[in-house]
Image (cartoon, rainbow, N blue to C red; front, side):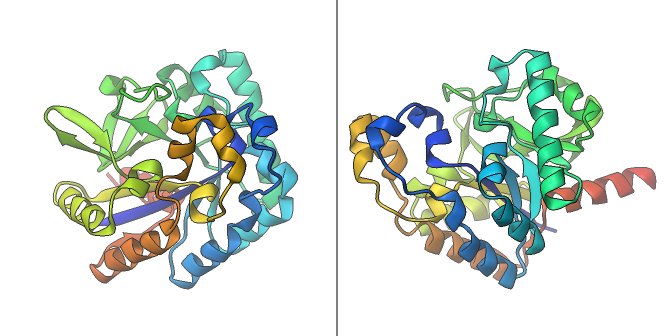
Length: 287
């Protein structure tokens, strides 16, 4: 069985690491987080339910939105307090911020939170036991790509493989974000800017090839990608940031829906991360 896990990091444009501190330069009141419901509604109508990793600031600002996303059937998970990079925090700071964020999210939706994803894949091995102690069942921050300046590649030698992209470590499940291996290097392609720069037919080909060797695929996206709005002031942040933010945003949602439709027509099963984690737990109990 081939599986597809669609995920959304519910954060605002100014949470992006390369745009932090740019609000005065951009001088824009437009927000993206509060405009994601139409596509999430459309996904629910297709029988596709996403895992939505929420920054605490987003639920403070839009509590009814997060409740509505939950009511649609999408999984609500944690994406930190204010999009802080994990490796920049002490263990006590991390514990406090994530415990507080988890409690706030659970109160907002009146339901337990099981998953966490570190901003910019900045998770460290040392913090995995903290997540377990706080009651999380899984972390979705592992990626085999050290060339990105913000990412952290966790040491997988202590991980025990449970399934394609899913591992056990320190009392918690670890979910890997897909990469493809080329010339002895791993390259990410499963979402965000990587999805934006690849044409539809090329992406479909890469995904088809990927599924020949793996059963599971995790895709990630952000509100500023699925909601198109041109930000005139972004040019004030410099050419590099303007390109990083703007490239491939127009038509992102249409391309995404086309890929999802293609996957569905080819028998791919769509699941929330929490649902598959429960399946893995049940299989382990019956071993």
